[in-house]
Image (cartoon, rainbow, N blue to C red; front, side, top):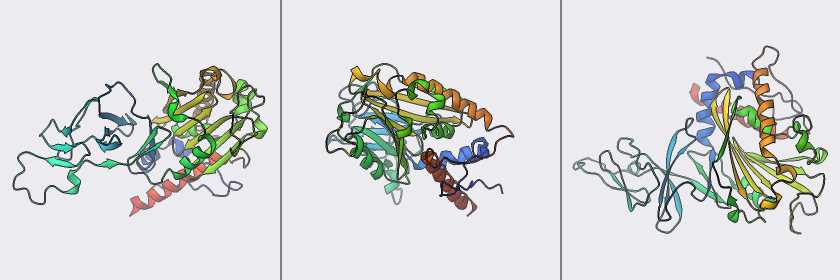
Length: 372
C-alpha cells in the first residue's frame, strides 16, 4: 500500500517542508477533503447574510459548494438565538429548504416528515406500527455554531475548539467595534488561482516574500520588525508600519500599545484568513477546487472608509494579483523533477512550519485509521 504520511520534524531547525508529492497526489487531495476540511471550523459570515426579508427565520446554505457540498440550515429560534441544522431530511435524505423564508416548522416535501423549528422530530405520516420510532437519529443533526464579533463559525465535525483564536482576537483587536463593521456593498470577490490550496496558504503564512514580491507593500511595512505569533490551530502575523500614515490607535492597556501596527493577519487552520487593518476587516477563504486550482473568496467589512487607501491595507487587489502570480509559478515548479522538498527559515517561516506539521500529523493519523 502506498503511504501518504509525509513526516515533518517538529524542530523547525531540522525540518524539511512537505514534498512536492504532497501537492501532486490525487489520493492526498481527497484525503485532505475528509480528514482536514470536514473536521475544521468554517467561517460563514457575520449574522446571516444574503437576500432575505426581515421576517425570515430559516436560511439554507451549502458549505464549500463544489468541494464539501454540505447542506446546512441556519435557523433563528423562538428565543432569537441562531442554530445550525442539517438541511437533510432524516427519512430519505431530501433537502428541506431551498431559499430563505419564514417557517413555524420544517416539513419535507418528499414524504411529509415534520420537524420542530429546533430540528427535533415532530411527526411522520404512514409510520404507524414502526418499532423503536422515533429515535434520536430521527432529529435533524445539529452542528456547532460559534460567534465572535458577530462573525459565525460552523463545524461539521470539528476536531479542535476555537478558544485560542477567540482569545488572541480579543487580545489584539477586541477593542474594535467589530459588530458594527459594515459589509462593503457589491458582489463578493472570488479570485481563481492556478495552484493547490495549500500552496496559497503557504504563501500567506510568511512575510518572507514581501520584499521580493510586493514592492508597493514593502514601502509600507517594516520588514525587519515583522512578527509571527503561534497559537493552537493557527497563528497571527503582525505587520509594523514604516511611518504613521495608517496605524491602529491602540488603547493604553493594549498589549501592543506604543507600537506602530499597520495590520494584524490572523490565520485559522486550514484555510481562513482574518486581516484587520485600521480601515476594517478583509476576510479571505481559500476554497480547494482541484490539486492545481483554488478559489479565494474576499469579503470586506468597513470601519473607517477614510483609511482604506493608506498603509498595508491600501491596495489589496494588487497584492492579491502578485500573490496569485507567484503561487502559480510555484505550482509549476513543484511539478518538475528539479524539486522535491525544501527547508524552513526559523526566523521567517514559523507559520508555514506549523501548517506543515499539522497537515503531516493529520495525514499520519488518517493513514493509521484507514489501515485498521
